[in-house]
Amino acid sequence: MSSGVRLLVAPYDSGHRDVRMGAGPLALLRAGAGELAADVRVLDPAGEWRAELATAFELNRLVAAEVADAVAEGQVPVLLSGNCLGTVGVLAGLAAAGHRVGLLWLDAHGDFNTPDEDGSGFLDGQGLAIAVGRCWRSVAGRIPGFTPLPERDVVLVGARDVTEAQAAVLRSSGLAWLPPAQARDPELLAATLADLAGRVDVLHFHVDLDVHDPSIAPANGYAAPDGLSAEEVRRVLGLAAAQLPVVSATLASWDPSFDVGDRMRDVALDLLGEITAAAVPVAR
Ligand SMILES: NC(=[NH2+])NCCC[C@H](N)C(=O)O
Image: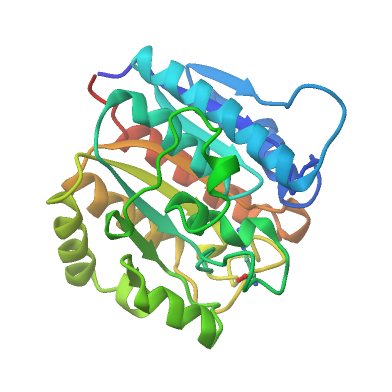
């Protein structure tokens, strides 16, 4: 039995507080996200100066410290984040427990861009690339506990809004990429997760809410068609939890200004409830 969820709230998007996707975490908190948690911590970098790269990595250091502390207390860390990049901090914080961590990353995008190829200049589109050590290694290396995850320990689920160039990079990488059609195939999904379970001991469950189909409501300004239903996302969680202990989670990238009748908000809250029920504290 766990001593509960420690909910970490990182209300930033690209260094800006409580705007755009950075508004999602506090809106979820106002809608009751903290009710199932034993502890809620809102994270803010020290000082006044904010800059996209520096603030994002400072947040990651705060996340890593909180995650390490939560794990030491037998709690399950769950991060509500404006940016996907926050998962890098969660992975770093888990490291102290000494397990081989697998990463299940649900997203409409690959977030696998690297700076020299990324014409958009959007740091958060590089989050998964950072997690596996493809870029920003020096600043990521200053997150306590950070070590790049082996690509073969990553499963990317639901990514579909990818250019040909991005797809080529994903295909030639070591990670397993299941676009929506494959992600909807329970047997393929279970086999992919079973394969992962042969290599890792525990799992981090990462969800960019834009993995969902925008017919629910667009999760953010990057939403793309042919996404998963809320039920399909919950099924991914269920299949994952059947194979591996899910020891932490991230819900990221919900921009409330795109929501319609609070539908994506409620999908996020439901999923948070499912995560709270399914997750277990990492054994130490
Ligand atoms: N973390 C995110 N919100 N990522 C969205 C990235 C979108 C952008 N079009 C890309 O591929 O590169």
